[in-house]
Image (cartoon, rainbow, N blue to C red; front, side, top):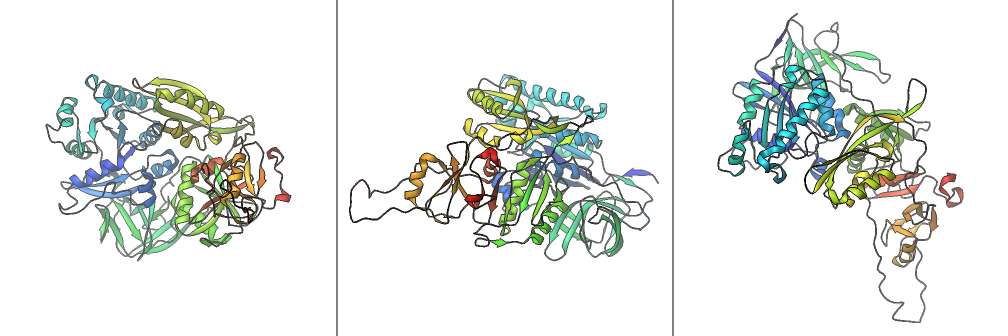
Length: 626
């Protein structure tokens, strides 16, 4: 058997750090490839089809599209840029043969840039460097000197990550994805930026066709396909998406599905493939056969796992399964046991909750499922709080009620038998005036300042090493300190000796000692006790957390007490009660805020915090006695 290349196909992906312009660039590539008619109304960030992706402005799941450059078909995959979703990038890199590395012209290579580039180089990919956002004001001064600095930083990163000599001789493009143009010539930038000259993405199309390699295929071997993604059709059910590495895939073909059972044992199922599809634009188009090297979507297989393999014969050995980096933390999920259970959504039982979590693990190889000692609670292992919060939000939108606990880090033992915990490398770009407050925040969380770089006259970049468990919730605090101008990114960089027990927060909780509806009168009297999370006329129950106490211990309070009515009227006592302020907490802030003895109750309408033990007489208000 010999290995050849299919010159009629290119399989590529765009990799970058979050918010460096991947999805915007994909939009213009698809437009300029002629996929849409002039009268079609197109939305921005077409590939971000998920409502959560549009709301948060990030790519969560990898997605496929295809266009043509002359007679050559290009399969393009848009990948996530946030480090919590790096498992999506890892599994998709096995499908493609080349990558476009997108780097912000002002920010340069950031942590996720390093991670995805390392994985791409390990796959042997050729890389095209595209420096985006050259229209930023901080880039254009001093004859684009900063662009040379970014190129040098990327080249140093290539060498540091062990790139070969061929990979290190990467072509460079300078782009403004927002306006849909790029160039390989720095001298053209002034004319393009001033709109004196029309610009297109033709230089990128040329490099995709001429520089990035076609897919390798094995001649003489029967059909073989590796699943790297899963989708769902209302008419066909579960569909597997993957690259055909050998042979020809045909409609109504009998194939053998190599997968794993619940115990992780390799099994083989005989299956029929009634329909097969390829990508054209952003749509799936049914075809009769698919040649080796192309990316296909097939129906007929049941219970597909990422990394499963299809072969034409039962005797063929499956391809090596897709492997990703190990999880660094876990979160506990439980059925909803609060007094308000079932009033705002579907209070699912343990079996359905278990099935939903297992379904997520089948689609997302970066997550793992674990049983607990009780039948009503389950562990989910993952990469970061954002990954967990996105799953929780998806489940809420499905109408489910459940509870989650505080994430805990996964410890490991070194060769000496000593415990180690994961540590994050954190980069924060911010106004220089906020650096002192941010440094103080990080030091309170056991962070160590590793470098301080001046980006311009007004902005600096700080690099910290901080234990992963102390990094929860840092993002929201940094945005508050920097007044929304801070840019934070992180990656798990290794392990350090276990730092011992740490409080998740300094203050205790204000806890309702009875059920009922809160009153403005009662809440106004409680404001001096701490910061409230709820408003008047909110339904509460015994054991529900209604705010943060101003002291370090918990406090049981009565938030439903009404004002005593008398027949004596006075101007001072009959005025309208106005609360000083209520702290509105997001899901991510609650995940960071809660303690180990508390649950977050998640329903389609509300997010609440409660104590695990609801009855006040059965729990201590002294936090170190729990």
